[in-house]
Image 1: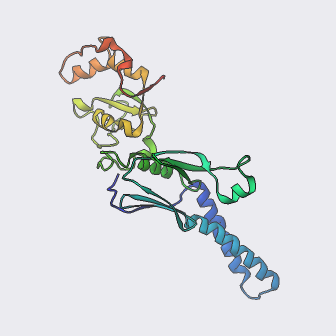
Image 2: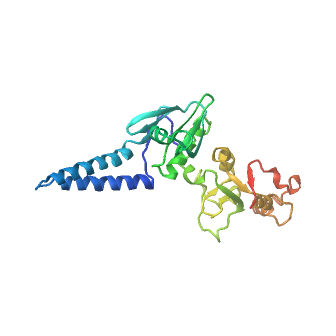
Image 3: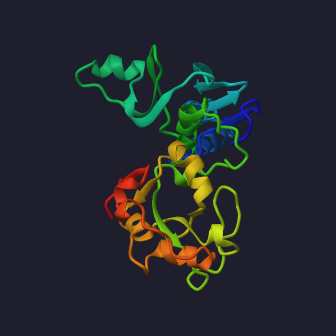
Length: 276
């Protein structure tokens, strides 16, 4: 993650925003064609109506953005700054169907309300939410990650370069790196290659074996990213069997076989475990 002092702007890039923009531009083109000579009364009416639709659809997307500047996050809706969050204070954010605008409240009321997909933000004093249905999933993950971790001591760590887009709440397996199965693999945070020294003989990998994380970076960011480690893979690495994965790694590093800890009890893991 870059320094909080740098200004960053997030604009909608989701499927809905692209669809809205495409439809708005199409209606804008149609309205311009209607005003080309020879102009008729029907053409003026159709052109005006198309122009109105074009403005609604395009401005809805162009007027929505999220700005992060000088330790604050500003959320714009229809070109107006509607919400502001001080990133120097702790927040708890999550995604879900929370937001209801004034029009929906007027039409449906409290009982039969229709809520939009949004981000809910809690502080010690209040709870609020803002719509994000036009944003992509990756953008929403980044926004939630910033709100939840802006006060963390590791928030400005140079190793953070947007990994929350694909690694937040990731399910991982603890395993040994093998060049036979994968020729090149590097840690997603420190970018160091696996297989070069004893420290990088084993690590954590996503279930598709595409993203690897070294042990040090895992310990540094496991709380921020809420990593979940497979119980079976952890038991295999920490088990007392002589042929266990952990013993094999330490034999390669010249340290000899490792002594079992807690009798190989998999519950010694300090992070959230999930049954495989």
